[in-house]
Length: 147
View (spheres, one colour):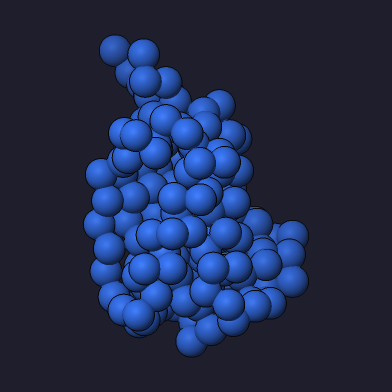
């Protein structure tokens, strides 16, 4: 039995991030891929993908932008934030960890109440991100349905 695979394209500045729209050295990826019941969401950061700019240097604001992108990807695949089962959160600065957890909790209260009591599996890493102005990047695995 074959599982259906659906690719949801990433668009930056209105261009699909795939050949021939981007040069060989440019980023090429899908925002998410749904395979069977699983949804794999690419890393989401605090950049405005229309203007290609990071418009705030406030950590919490970048995190909400990233989480909004994750939520959109989950919804495009026919799911919701309640169905995120694994997160990988990449932070630029270790000192943002408490703010990250507070912002995550507040966001889950609003958009994923099931994740407040039963949070997803989670990994946090302190790393150098793709652009110096990025403060956070969030990658998730979710499911279309918990049933």
